[in-house]
Length: 121
Image (cartoon, rainbow, N blue to C red; front, side, top):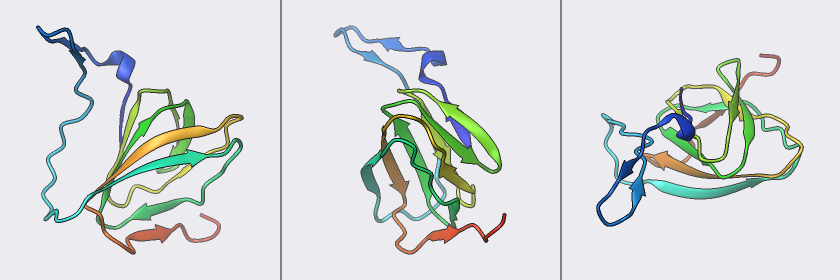
């Protein structure tokens, strides 16, 4: 797991007026023939079953503040933050009192890759 708090990353001001912040540069030593980009919307007070993925990396870009559990640790995320989940990182959304929108990238896209946490763990 890696958390990138956007507010703590320096930006690059380009001559044409754009401001660019590099949130992630990730080498992936996997064959990638498909990727996926998802827009996810959780309702207020949503709690997700903990799960992991065997092969894929998940990259979450948060449009709203959120709380997640990753490998037994509570992670507080703010709008603009990025969360990188590596294969086998056990994770799930935790309840917050408002809807949460995030963009999720799957690299590579691997159908059937999701494994639920064993009950009681």
